[in-house]
Length: 59
Image (tube, rainbow, N blue to C red):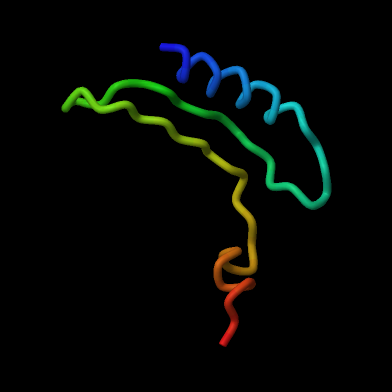
């Protein structure tokens, strides 16, 4: 349970950070899925103009 508490604490801190070069975190989730596996997720604000992967790896 220590890892989940640490994840939640870090997410709470990150939600309060505002910077023009960072995508805003809207919410987060830490739970156990139906198979008993640890599940963690971050939900970010939608950013237009495609994915970061596309911008970083243009061909």
